[in-house]
Image (cartoon, rainbow, N blue to C red; front, side, top):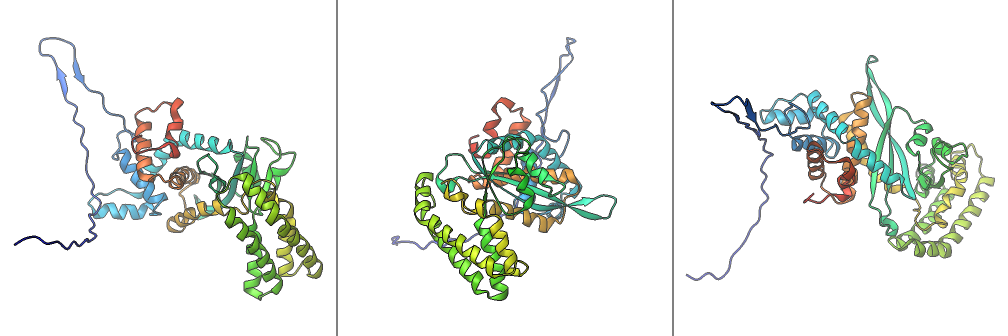
Amino acid sequence: MHRIGEDRTERLDIIPAQLRVLVDIRPKYACRTCSDGVTQAPAAPWLVEGGLPTEGAIAHVLVSKFADHLPFYRQGQILARSGIQVDRSTLADWAGTAAFHLGPVFDRLTEHLKSSGKLFMDETTAPVLDPGRGRTKTGYLWALARDDRGWGGEDPPGVVFTYHPSRAGAHAEQILLGFDGILQLDGYTGYDRLTRPSRKGGAPIAVAHCWAHARRKLKEVFDRDGSEIAAEGLRRIAALYRNEAEIRGMGPGQRLSARQARSAPLVAEFGDWLQAQRLRISVKSRLGEKLTYIHRQWGSLQTFLHDGRVEMDSNAIENLIRPIALTRKNALFAGHDEGGRTWARIASLIATAKINGVEPFTYLKATLEAITAGHPASRIDELMPWSFTTSS
């Protein structure tokens, strides 16, 4: 018989995750004829001194919680099926220890972002257990992001989340100490203090408001009432977005020229239309309130016409916040304010790794191992997610 060909069939198989125990054996040596004492090799450093987990195990817990949105109690159930009993409070302690040691990396990441000429900012709720009251309180994760891919910027994208116990605008002011660039925002009034001469930590910030939020206001009215005025506003905004789609990825100079030639006349016409409708419609009506919202931000809605680096909306940061909502939904709350800060630090590093095409587990494992081995502070930039390679 002669072989004349073959049929090949591929099937997907799953091998469940395997747990293993690593044993370090350090022999002790002593001389029978001298008095030099006992000699033994020093123990390898551990992130959790005297604890059970390796740095890889801790990285797995962090990624499972903050990237795959598995609460600690579910992770405990999964481990129990493999015969390993680890209480969720222990897993939380591991995460807190890792967040403490990753603090300098997080701080340096924040410094990198605040040195940029343009950032996005937004905030989202982070429920936190309120001990003694038998319920949760509402904390906030404030997101600060850089994403210059829309105009081909050289700086890598990144995001940092900072936990604060409230939504007060003073927290935004504190987070942005030292930043003097353009800030892309939604319409939350807490950010107004950033544009005032009395701003702490720098000169008044130039703001670019979000056309997606303006569109959303009109869409709410159209979906509820079928308003033809709202529909007309939506059509006008859609024309602006068509122009943006055509110039995405071009350099800032090309984007600016295209906007001045094609988008600026449309924005001017929208402004005339907006004023005409506000004269016709009661400010107390639902549509009147939405038009007033757009009017209040009209000046900063035009920022994108004067700087090719600026986007029309803040969708980039809203996309980065979505995983926070999934973690919040599954875990329900953080155990305390320090848990909120742990959440912020780990979520920052995972999100930044992901948007730079870096696998989060591999990055966190290597970074925790480097920190445990005494990585020098003078080379901390090597631990940034965008600097990571599999050979790091």
